[in-house]
Length: 244
Image (cartoon, rainbow, N blue to C red; front, side, top):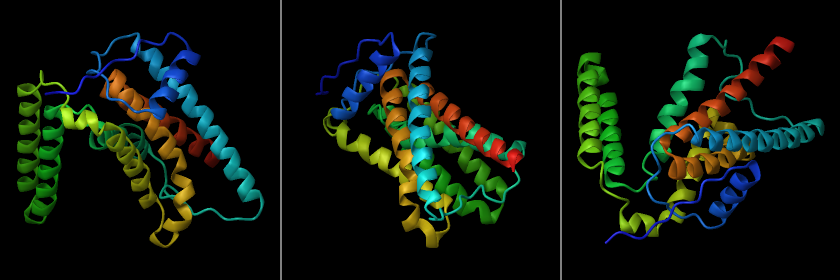
């Protein structure tokens, strides 16, 4: 027996989208499966990106005020690294894709998505463990895991969200968002992690928007917003570097 789920009516304005997003945060509810990618859904991504930029701007302003008092902020992993095309690709394309699959690919609650992620994680762990014996073994295991995950997605593509998942969705949504923010603590030196806790507030805030987009518009929408967010961030870093 699957728990009943409902979808939000499409928002046609910035205010409407933000109102629906606020209502979702107040009471996270797993909707019916997200629609197939469509041009109209790009509007939702744009509206959440504008909100994301507004939140990031406010948080950066607060950070600037704190730093003006003489408090030194821990440096991120990008500090001192020469930002070339490979770094930009990793930050703007690779990281959003991997992180969205890992932290929100399964938020649909559909068995195919959950099982495929478990298979991918297991294959990835096995590939890492076998990498010491040669890259060929790691590549074979990783490839087999990817094929198995794709087969699971295809076989279970029509299955709706699991009933227990829908019931516990609010808890799972917030745990996913918290885990996403917490993993970014590793961008800071181990000795500075406690002090860096407030510095992952941007990831926590963005994580709520990514989760909303994922369940209402599809994984592609959360990946796109994540890409835009990281693109804006790396652009600021590059601008700051050129200004210095």
